[in-house]
Image 1: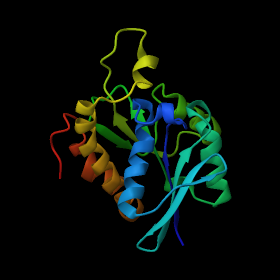
Image 2 (image 1 turned 180 degrees about the vertical axis):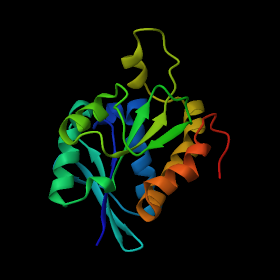
Image 3 (image 1 turned 45 degrees about the vertical axis):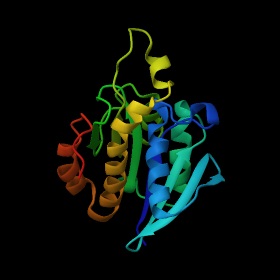
Image 4 (image 1 turned 90 degrees about the horizontal axis):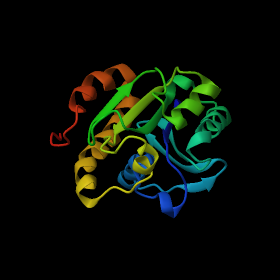
Length: 196
């Protein structure tokens, strides 16, 4: 059976819930809720399992803290013997406006600590979905921004992107990275108003 690992990056602990840096967690929480599955506390992360049309899907929210995310990703890829081509990592992205998103088949970490650590351990060749969190912060205040909580207004802008990301995960599993990029990236330009 084909197996997939979908990773949503974030930090564990209540104080980080609904912060911008935990947008990856938020996407997986939405996916789990829509799929009626729950996460269990396992090694290096919260893990949930489901299947989509005969394909087994593991959802992973690493509990290693962001800067060591690669430990969790590498462990679960190896433990479940999942091909790296079937790995999708979801992260927050300051270079994209709130509500925008961009799916890529591979590439650099763009200065993101979580992606950077994954890259150190397994290389650049894995799919990643970057969720825009905007960059409306004064110079030097990026850490406060990414660890800050979404306002209610911002959550409304973000929600359609999260809903779309849930559909993108399904498409990634069923149709593959190329078709998913072609279908969804044009929707992800931001503004958060368009929603299919």
